[in-house]
Structures are given as C-alpha cells and as structure tokens.
Image (cartoon, rainbow, N blue to C red):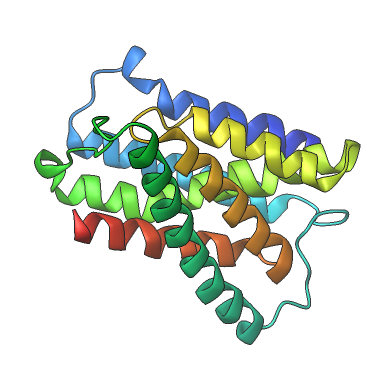
Length: 196
C-alpha cells in the first residue's frame, strides 16, 4: 500500500473514532470494541504500507530503540514541565490541570495507555510526518504533524501537546522505528495517569 493511501485510510479511521459519538450511542463494552477494531485496522494498514522513503529503517536495533526510548521519555517530561513552568510564569492564575479523577475506569486506562498511543503515533508520526516529508522537508512534516496533534488535544496546555509531537517525531526519526515513539507515548501516559 502506498503512503498516500495509508494517509487517507488512517486519517479517516482516526477521525471516525473521534466523532463516533455523533453516529452511535455506545456503552463501555461497545466503545472498547470500536477502539479495538480501529486500532487493529490501523495496524493492518501500517504493516501493509511500504516503508520506502519513510523514517522507518529496517536496521533499527533493540538497543537503539531502548536508548532513544529513554531519551524520549526524559525529553517528554522536560517539555511538559518546561511549558507548565512558562505558563505559570505568564499567567499564574490559569488552571491547566485536567481533572481525571472520575476517569479511573479500566476502559479509560486501556484507551489512554494502549490504544491512543498506538493510533496517534501511527497516524501523526508515521502517516502525517512521512506523507508531508515526501513532498516537503521532513521538519515541515514534523511541525505540521505536531500542530495537528496539538489541535486534537483540546484539554490542558496546547503547547505541551505541540512539544510532545515534536519529541515523538524526533525519537521516531532518530531511532528509525515507530515502535520507539509508541512505547514512549504509552509509558508517558501511564506515568502521567499514575501521578494524577
């Protein structure tokens, strides 16, 4: 499958999932089933997509993925703390903490720690960055992808999501494996949820 088709299919599936509440009234089990099917479909599309002319390199070793995973996790938290510090300096009365206390269900945890990182990394990092990067310099793909990633996260500090998009793209580029950014995204979400 070409990267162009990958971009169309994965974008459609991701947007469909985000807007599924407009079409269906789903209970938790049905929502879980829908997430599972869409993640599975996006994974199938990824594995069927040619990796030629992408940031994905077949030579990525486990050691390289682990190294860039640790670097990415540190950078992710530095970005979050840095933007929170700047935001508090500019506007100390602004409350950007997202209250997730009522979201401690297994469904919320599974979606936040497993499903969303897989979908978001395959859509924003693999599809968007590589698709734009085939037409323009790769840094344009990274910035545009990060902006779109930021706009999909309307709760909290938007600049944090932009910064995380840059970090996830950077570690994907440096490691040559989308698995690196997926794992960092999963671990980071897990730690953030645990801390909240």
